[in-house]
Image (cartoon, rainbow, N blue to C red; front, side, top):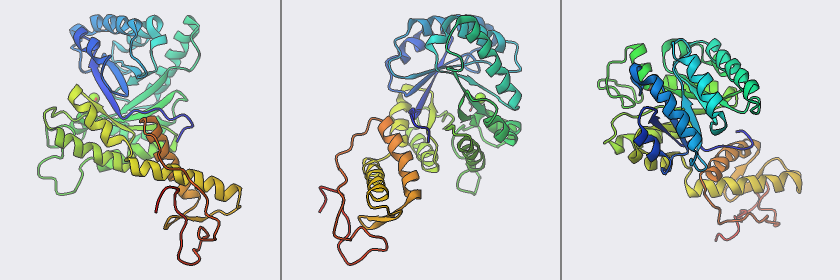
Length: 336
Ligand code: GLV
Ligand code: MG
């Protein structure tokens, strides 16, 4: 978990060709907004969309959201101008470029070099603009480890279920939902876990892709809860109605958040003051592995704006020792 964790619970796709959607997106509660130049924009509208995206970035007003642009894939005729024109004209308003259909680490290296060239030209801070790489077909998944290590600019790997389903021949048109007839519990488990492991091995965020049935908020809530439980940081959303559902699914619960903060305080106290590596907190043993788990939950909770109400107070009667002695166990302050 990086020191300064940025929330990407909901990542809102906004078609770059729609002025109305670009204007509306500013006031929505998504953690990240990305202005799309790829599949939401028809080939004939690509150039106009590029100009619209530049204007929207320069107009600002995005609040504390992360702002990204999804350019066209590295093998398309639009990609070089997407990057050069958008970043040269509006790079200061941009946190990241989303690169779709990454099948080769060379795609990421190409984007990294392009960004570096534009930054030198404009005098912008070198390396500031990040890259989020979409893994959305069999070739990309097969090389996901190399892709995840291809540039220090990488911030996240993003699963693209629609393109992935097409690539592997999954027999369903319901993107993000389980395919009818599949008898396992989650047809996306393998790509999701494969991408998550590659992302974490390189210190990156892992983001799940869209759920296309906009009217099915229960189905979306189930899909989001499942990838959140697996460890993902967030999920794409395509419509304002999906934002709250997804933000909720990817925020830790208040109880888990409180517990994570208590574990961090308690672990700090027991290791530095009492020089013990394992101790009891309430009825549970905590150690270095608990601290690592708690770090992730606490970072996500803080980034999601949760506030703690409990403080850790050490117990001095020996009950916090591990293995525990006697009946009375250490308690978080303010609890029975
Ligand atoms: C997103 O780009 C997807 O293909 O699902
Ligand atoms: Mg796609």
